[in-house]
Length: 267
Length: 164
Image 1 (spheres, one colour):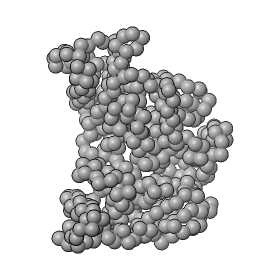
Image 2: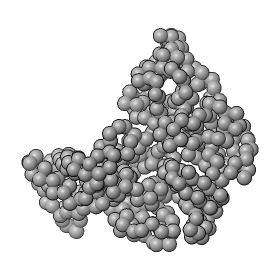
Image 3: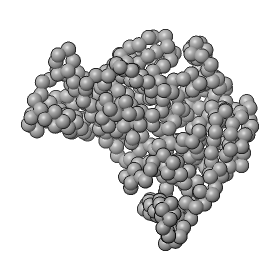
Image 4: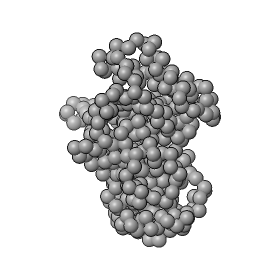
């Protein structure tokens, strides 16, 4: 059971950061996951009055405020224009519209949850996180950091010409994924580079980078070989939703489908 | 702590502890349509609108709605009754426990999506669970309601609300 002694709607980021340094303080996002846990929180800090609920697009980046909801990124035209339906696909299976109107991008990313679709999706893109104290760092670095008392301000996606696909498997609609896979490809420093992010293994999402030059007319067998190789480089675990071996198989299938879809677009 | 917000277009004041959820405050204020089902953000029974958006009141801290506008089924009674007749007409409720949350999300959908298709409807309402029915009655009710609205708007005679 979660108990909270004080609720503070922070007036400034400084105030929020200072309050959050106490061991028994917590920053609240959408409260979807925190509420289900067991904790005695002395002060819960609400960031909703600090203007972190906007998605801003500039020439080079799309900056998503930490308090933006999953529904906002699902409906964001800038993300759709840049990366197709991938981002919307990554969140549209998460419970229902009411849930996605409430759950925040910051809560999903900061929590670095093992089941997170959002983390799996953004990890494969050229993504950074902006922290109040820790500056701006790559999401791939942040994902492996131990949780601390910093505050996540925004998620920044660098606009780059990349193709993005996202797929997940669920035992039932609205459940956590059994496996979630993102595949991204584009030219990086003049070389064709593929990024694979696999989440819900059931560990938190991890990233794999490969400089593979795969012809657009690659045979199905060739794509399957690449997918098998990519899937084999992740570790998988067993829980009530599936065994490690089942997850490895699903990851291979999803990666193959996503690679084939990307290559077909290039034909 | 004391919180003030607009409930169904009326300014209200309520007492709430820091960890009181909006669901409990709303029921305390007499909005008994708001029900607690799963308490784990999955069933949609506790759906209300906050600033016009469907939200799950079982997981919203009451303190966080200070200064915001909250709408429950009691605030859209006429529209809810109208749509409810279609639900009844299609035999789309048995125990009826899920209906208030379901109706709130259906009405939110009508405000957000223009003429939604069957797949859009299913996806929008994925967060509303019903243990009694197989959802087919609800889907029929939604489609017939939309059809009746369209016919009314175009001036054509429509099917009577709730008629089988």
